Every structure is written in structure tokens, then in C-alpha cells.
Length: 116
Length: 115
Image (tube, rainbow over all chains, first blue to last red; front, side, top):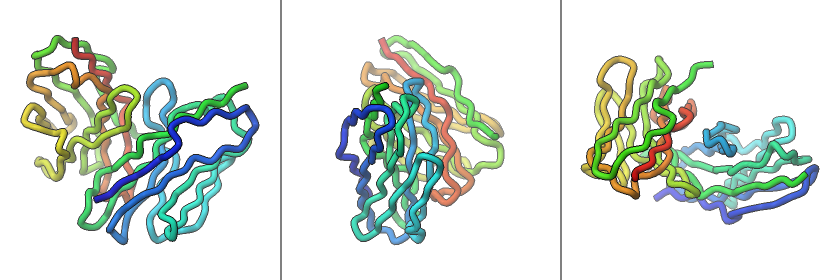
């Protein structure tokens, strides 16, 4: 069965600090997709990134970067020079493309608070 | 950019009443989903729907839940007899494919409060 673990329940940083949100996943499928979503206080789910299991290249998008390591089943998310607007709950999620569940399985989320 | 639209944004209902949550998926998407998020908890999968039938459902999706695509555009979630523990944010999502290869587009959610 698939599982996503976000061990950090809550992180608090001061503006301009770098912060890394951890995500560890479990799956038996060889083809799968990993996602990060942001949920601001307004409640909607904002898509940040999708990564397939065959693409282990790290990705950078502005202040955001993602480190995908199949060897450790991790897909960590780093925010560089954090800002108050980054304060939100961040969810890592997994979907399997083979015989497993194709719908998204979410982690429990990490609440990030960025203090001014 | 195409959006998934959910109505209403907030619904309050009495325990035991039936509620219908509505969603308009993106027009060229083929797969539709409902997820639930109890306040302060993670987002949980309820059901996926393809070709006018349920393709997958979770253990949460019991007999009191049903889904329907009554016309070419709407996708609904019905809860027959609401309980207090059904209070949650309900998200609709749609995707072009059934796997994550094209990603999922989420609506902004319906907050259901059962009193």
C-alpha cells in the first residue's frame, strides 16, 4: 500500500531563513508521481510541482527547489529566503500509475510559519 | 487557465439531512474525484469516477455517499444522512488521465458544517 510521511508537523522560521520540508514515501509501483501542494489559510490547494518516478533531476523554481532521491524514497522541498507569504500548510502527495491506487495519497502536512 | 468550480463554498446542514455538493470539472478532463479534509487533518481520497462509473473508492466512501454526473458538466457528491463527523472541507478534482501523469486540478472546496 502507498504511504506518504511528513514527519515535521510544524516549523517556525524567521523571514529570510531557508527551510526544508521533508517527505518520505512508500510504494510498490515502479511508476509513480509525486506532488507538493500548498494550502494557505484561505483553504484552497495550490499545486506546486509534479515529478514522475523516472525523473530524479532536482528542480528549482524561483525560491523553491525540490530534491528527489529514489534511494531514500524522499522528495524534499526547500524554500530559500522564506517570506511571510510562504506561511501555509504544505502537503506532499503520491499517486501510483500501475496496479496501486491512482488517486492521490496525501501526507499529513507540515504547517510552516514564517515570522517577520 | 481552466478551473474546477465548486458550489456552494460553505454549507451548513442539520444532522440527518441530505446534502449535495456540486462540482464542474474542466471540460476536457475524463477523471473526476472527491477528497475530504477534516479540519486540521490531511486530505483524504473518497472516490474517483470515470466513464460514468466509480473507478476507485476508499473505505471512507460507504453507503451514505454517492456520486453522479447528472449531465455533461456537473459532478456531484451526495451524503444521504449527514453526521457530525461529516463536517469537513470537500474538494473536487479532475484530471485528463487516471494517473498522475497530467496532474490533478482541484476546486477551491466546499466547507460542510453539520450541526
